[in-house]
Each structure stands twice: as C-alpha cells, then as structure tokens.
Image 1: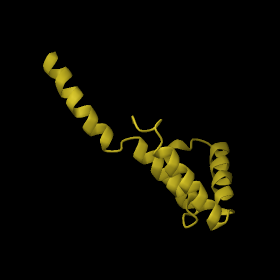
Image 2: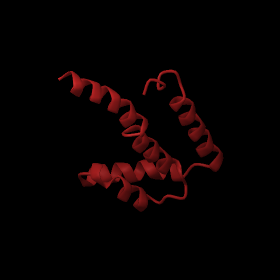
Image 3: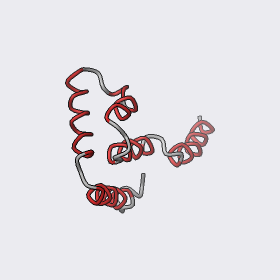
Image 4: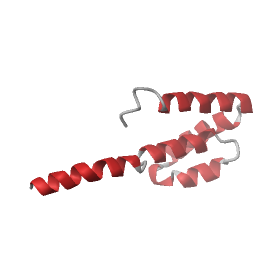
Length: 93
C-alpha cells in the first residue's frame, strides 16, 4: 500500500505538469479568441461538449462575439488571459 502511495505521489506531478486539463482549457481559449478559427472549426474542436441545438447556438453566438472584435481587443483579451494564467492563484496548478 505504501508503494502505491509513493508511486501515485511521484506520478501526480508529472501528470499535472503535462498540462492535462489546463492545456485543453488554454487551447479552447486560444481558439475562441483567434479570428482565424471559424465557428465551424471551433464547434468541431469542442463537439464532445455540445449536446443539443441550444448549446450549439450559444457556442456559435459566443464565438461570433469574438469574431466581431478588433485585433487590438483580441490582443487585450489574450493579454488578460496570460495575466490570469500567470497569477499567484493559478501558480499551484
């Protein structure tokens, strides 16, 4: 039992540092902000989370909001996300 605990404690930091979970979130945010990604591409990227038509409509409208923004605004949003990712509150993760 102790060996199992040691293996889990040794493997957990490697698992977390690989970006599991957080890396996907960062990729979703990057694709949401990017003006080069169309609504269709974005939907195909997150299709496993879209279960009905109302969710699809909401996702399309959300992505369209970012497509309507200027490049300066999108750069500011990306800067804000970088500040959040590098904040002391996200550091433990």
